[in-house]
Image (cartoon, rainbow, N blue to C red; front, side):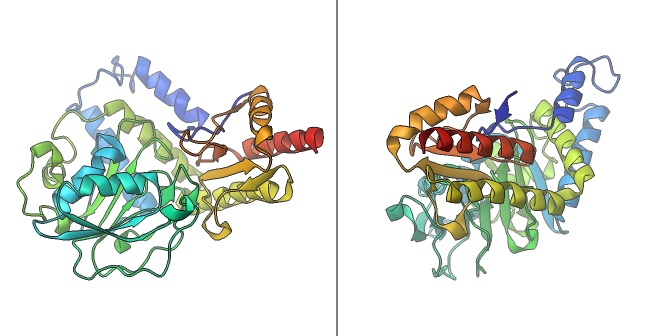
Length: 355
């Protein structure tokens, strides 16, 4: 048996895989594959409408916001956000909590002034900074809610005097959020929403066209909003599979229910990391991510033998990011707690053999 702890693309429920694979052969009895159906067909328009409604329902998106399904992943959003929100001569404020936040800042600097309100880089991004001030004259404030590489998560968002933008790629739909606190949220789908290929953007309508900058059509949120995410051919299969996955999430009890399960999964794994003398966590306890659990061996010589044993026991994707090493167990929504228990068993087995 295989246990998928990969950081992304994400694990999806088996029932979603089965439904999606059937649609590849025959989509809803049309005699056509979901891979070849026209994105202008009424059948796919129904998919778009249902996916949109599921997002709004699961996240309690209020009136006055547009929900967009775009392409280019979160990495393109690093550019689209400042292109659309950062006017000439303005400054954008960023919270630097990891590699993706740093990359977002780099792209924003191509459009205007950028200031880092705080950074945890000096401690290898092992904590979430606090006690910082967001400039009241900034065009917007940007934060990354969960850091997949270093394993920290922002559990409390600051009160921002300016529109708050958040990259929620790796914890969207894993916990409840108050959308009204944000001007713009974006998330690559390939963690908790669906397969790679689509990015979700939720933007306050009053921010559309805000920068005053002339933009290429594909980079303009307003054009995508006006065209209901159909300005160009959308990633049809990714959106369809996301719809199936969001239906699965709704049937489980929605975001509030999955949050309880995610808390239990993370607690079980962190408890073993803290209890087991072979291992130790890499982040401040209060900032430990529920999605990406990062840890190392106390003795570096144990790293390769443990990885070998884990792989022999069916653990997939637990090797840490190449930039930091160690181990990373990504425990997204569809990963059952039984997989966490299986990893804990391997950790205990290794400690028994090497204690």
